[in-house]
Structure formats: C-alpha cells, structure tokens
Length: 396
View 1 (cartoon, rainbow, N blue to C red):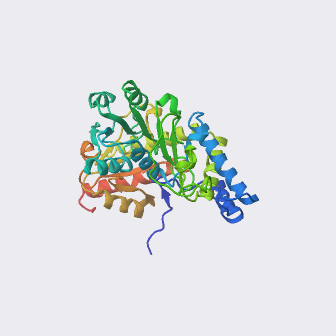
View 2: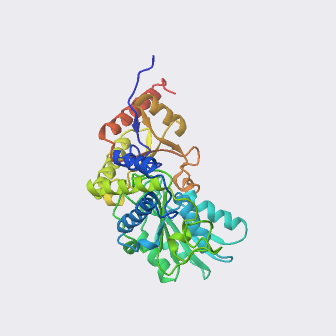
View 3: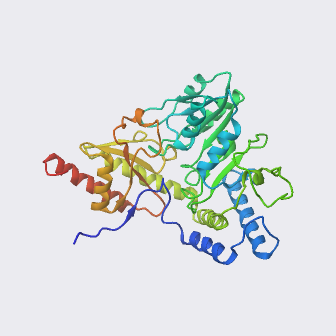
C-alpha cells in the first residue's frame, strides 16, 4: 500500500482552511437555530438574523478603518462585488486603467465591456515580480479616464502594490479608485483612508477566515452605483422601485445569514488572537519558504526580491522548476509531502507574460495561520529530492 502522508494545506490564497472552530459553530448555530431571513419578518428569529447582519456591517466597518457601516453591502462573493462596482460606475465612452497583475474578477468584466464597444481600457504592465509602477498609471491617463482598478496584492506572486500612490494619482485627476482587497483584507494592516480607496471589494473566505458565500463591498459616500441586480430586499415591498439606502439597494435577494454569522465569528477570532501578528506570522513563513526554495538550483522563485521587508510581502510564494510542468509538480508534491498547492495561471490572465510563465503558469504556496515551518520543510525536501533525481536521470 502507498505510504500515507499528512495533509498539508497550502492553498489559503484560494480559500483559507482550516477555519477557526468558532466559525463553524457560529455558522451551524445560525443555520440550525435561527433559520430565518434577515429583513423579512418581525418575529424573534428574524430579528436575530437582522442583528447578525448589522453586527457584520459594524465589524467590517471597523476592519476597514472606521468607515460608515451603512456604506457596506454583502453580495454573494467578491467577484459579484467587483462586477457590481464596475458595471455600476461605467458608462459608454468611459476609459478604465487596470493592471497586468489584476485578477480575472476585474479584468474579465472590463474585457466584456470593452469587447462590446462600451468602454476603452488600458492595462498597464508589471515587472517580473508582479509589481506595478504607479507612474504607469499617470502616463496611461486620458481625458475620458473615470476609473482605476488595482489588486492590492497579486494572487500569483504576493507583490503588494503601492495602493496609496495609485489612489492619489486617481484623485488628483478626479478619478475613482477601486481596490480589490481579496488578498490583503485580514492579513495586513488596512484602512481605506490611508490607501486612498473609493471602493473596496473583498471576500469573507480568504484571509478573513470566514465561510464562502459572502463578499464585502464598501463604497464611499458621494459615489452611487447603477444597479446590476434588482429584486426583493424586505424593505418598501409595496413599491417597484429599489430602496434608497445603499446597503438595501446592493443586497437584493436572500442574504446568507449563516455565512454572515461565521464572518462575525472569524473577525472576533482575529481580534482575539491579534490579526496583525497572525498576518506577520504568515508572511514570515512565506519569506522563509522563498529563501529555502531559492537554495534549490532547479527552482525559480517568482516573488518580490530577497530582503524585502515583511510588510511589503504577502503569504504567497510562486515558483517553477526546471524539467517539470507546474500541474505535474503539484501532483508530485501532494503524493510525496501531502502538500496541497495551486498550479496553473491562478485566474490571472495577463500577469504571466511578464513573469515568463506563459507555458503552464506557476506552482503557488499560500500560508495561513495554521501552517508551520514543517510544511515548508516537507515541500522543500521533496523538491530537493526531485531535483537530485532529475540531475541523475531517475526522475520524471
């Protein structure tokens, strides 16, 4: 029988696992015992569901740096939140600046609108580690530019973009700055004011350690979005017009109350265990991993350069290995070390032409609060073994 290896989950940039036990307990309690829909009744359990959603808004408002909780909505995921922002802001003839390091959750909606002749786009380049020069944003500006879109952290390389500088460039020209915080909110210090963000979108299920099924959309006062989705909200049901309040307008349909309960519990857990310190711990693991992998001759680490301060890194390490396709290598690492990794292009359509990884993409490790140095050593030891085998012609 094959040797059993322990499961080493290293795909936290896709979704964090395991979740703190309190997250699942809160989710189950809301699903089993409350069961009601927020905003749809005046009985006890419906009011309890309302209270969960209200508490979630308050906790996320605090997490974003003390913003107005009434400007926070909970769509069914970050991709929907980004689509609501993009389709809600842009009008025919508008020009948008995005970056090659962005995720398909922004690049595909923009491509969709551009391919239909609705908008024009400029995708500014990045360097070989996924970093974007803010000056490229300034140089790409046109009179019709309305929106700048940027992923705060590259989900492929972990590069942390200069969001504050990019937002300042947009504001100097009366533009709007949409920040995709999927890979930053929850794992690094975050405040919309210091980042010059006008709109922030993020998921609950990544670094916030919450469940799937709920995303976060914050829009600063003064910006109104055309609606992508219309429907019931439980408020002003006698009218065919959508309600005036931001959160009600953005939350047509049935809210996922158990997921919101889990999100509240996750943020509580991060506060109790010092989320800033946990983020630093995860980034330190990634830095140690990158250093260890750089010592293996056949491995090419694709990340910000060695010596970068931890605050400028993310808990993400991408690499390739000479002689191995990334998908093949990820399968071997699971068989040898129990390491569960992401391989391929990571839903990032444009960045790989700048990383030199158009043939197969990369293998990506991403570290959460429950990973340890033993996970790094298991992966690195296996790669060293594969490297030696390949050198002597006995490997794959």
